[in-house]
Image (spheres, helix red, strand yellow):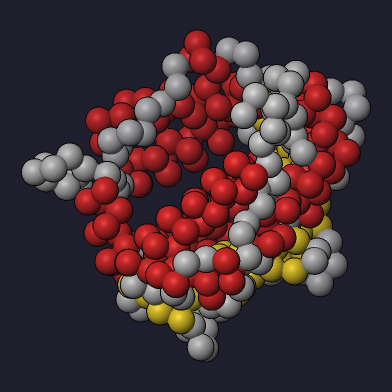
Length: 331
């Protein structure tokens, strides 16, 4: 009875989310930089391919915040129904990169210096870019810039296809296939996942779901495989043979419900690391009421020539930086 009740409550909570016209969520890893370095060392990377300390600090403290808004309920929406989207990548020191899609435009701003330092990719100062870089300098200075979304998509398609060829249709899932996938997911969860519930205060309830990882993934892929013909091109499913080395340790997800609404999901991944030295490794997803993505004030518009000129300028400056750092021996 508890298994049925807990599963039903989760179903209802996800159905409530699907009825919303806007959703906001925050995703982050519950892990420290030392653990990431340990996991990297145990993977035995090639010399020079080790995870840099700066990257480990960036990943461990990073959060991704996303908001989507549609004219229709989310579970009934197609791509044309979404009217706004915002995403922000941040760490304890501030926002590293943020972009919004509102109306016909995409808006972007970033802390280029902080990103370059964390990724060990030095960027040239904005005042060293050529004049044709134009508004691209604003982007390097951390200010909001914008470009026409459809124009950028068109250029991307033209650059990615052979001359004279017809553009490929965008990969998508029709409503019928989405329902089949959802039914397959529900069937596997009902068969392979153990549920337990625990009450809390002020209408809060915790539902834990536990399942062996390899068994769950293998069963899910098995249920989806008959739908391969209905999936978009490029969505290749792994064979059972590819999954045999995946750990079959039990993974637990903790769902927090507040008055029947899903507010947080915590997935404990520590056992998947298969390392006694990894004590804490989790994935955290926090849900909240959707907020309307807004147009940033004062954004500088970029045209396609400026974008291409800006990229070319950065590449030239990067090449000069690399050449200036060459040793004199042998020259």
